[in-house]
Image (cartoon, rainbow, N blue to C red):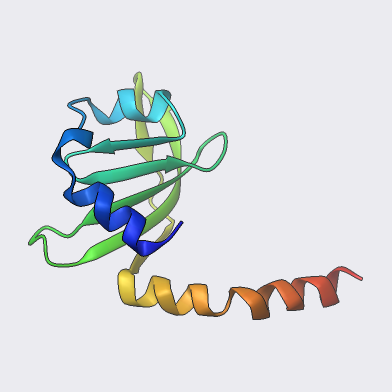
Length: 105
């Protein structure tokens, strides 16, 4: 999905959902809460696209989650990209895919 798609979602007020983080993690593959987007990649892996505390920068946070005391919590290790670094990573996707093909032979 394009960056414009996420920007449109972040700025569209009627998409906001008032739920707790636990409810979001248990529902569908993509949810929006308080201008943050949560995308479920698999069983316990999720991507959180969020604005920084000062609401100036976007961050893409990728990590696993686990259940503790009935709540979903993120593990301490993971990766968090600024939008600039995320776009830089995306620019290397073709090279990475080609390298994977070479190493998979």
